[in-house]
Length: 139
Image (cartoon, rainbow, N blue to C red; front, side, top):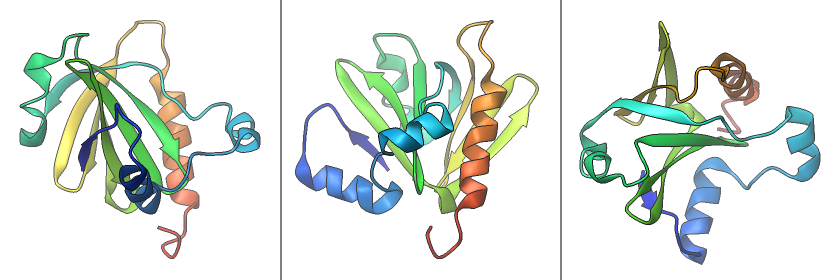
């Protein structure tokens, strides 16, 4: 589900929390050593993203926020902050060389690191470990 997350909207916040959970507390953020990813460069995308990608003003970049039951992949479209909300039970990640392909609910984004000195493998390992820790009842 791709949503405009630029403005505070109580209904959207409740919908997101229902899908991927509330933001982590400060203790958990410290324990996980952060819940945000480095910047990714978008290389390829499925049909749902086509209206957004050619018009991205600030470059085709995104980042990921970890949540207890999923992730929010954020990117810019014009002056808006967009979010692709993916619960863990819909999330699949594949690595091919330097690229990662993130699949969720029939859509995908192919990304790689935006800067040469960034280690994406550590963040992806953290995300997959968090996904593996969630039992099917929680997800």
